[in-house]
Amino acid sequence: MPNADEVKTRIEAAIPGAQADVDSADEVHFSAIVRATAFDGLSRVQQHRLVMDVFSAELGGSIHALALKTEVP
Amino acid sequence: MSDNQIRDAIAEAISSNDVILFMKGSPDRPACGFSARTVAMLEALETPFAAVDILPDQRIRQELSALSSWPTIPQLFHKGELIGGCDIITEMYESGELAETLGVQPPADAPEDAPAGADPAPAPLGIENRL
Image (cartoon, rainbow over all chains, first blue to last red; front, side, top):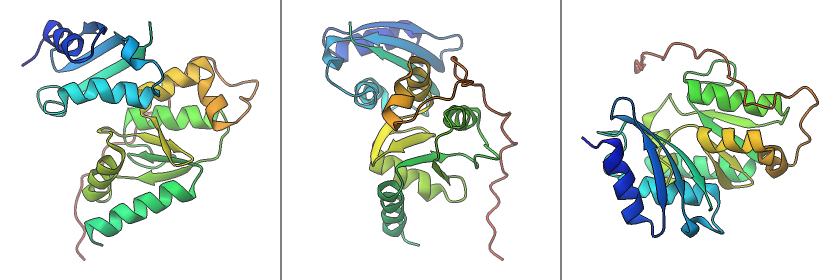
């Protein structure tokens, strides 16, 4: 089961230059704010997909929900 | 209806409605808090929208997510393109970007913060009716 630090590490490893702040009260529902230059020029949907794709195997399983906010620095 | 027919019907609904929301329940009886909030935001902007309840057949959700590459419900489409789910729509509502994207003038009394939405109706039991 992932914790907030692991979620942060995996987002930052998967998206070059990304910086993530991740919170979780129960380690199944997560909320993350992700800043990345890689988001520049992408729609919000495309930005969210980049992050969601990191957890595609776990979403709906060990990760029930990932509330997401994305920003271009 | 085969899975392919469901997918074709979804694609047709998306292309023939400028603003269409795929949700749990109906705008009058949303069955999930995220769907309720998204409906409340569209209603606050007084923008007309089509709505599809994904609950009656689980294949609707499967085919929709396969089509949109988006895992969660609700999903709001504008002119054939996925704009987002509840998180993105909330962010866009509060920044004024949602009204801009949809090409509507927000009414003077529209709340600045995203409205909470009605309490969701109890989730249906999911009984399959074969009568």
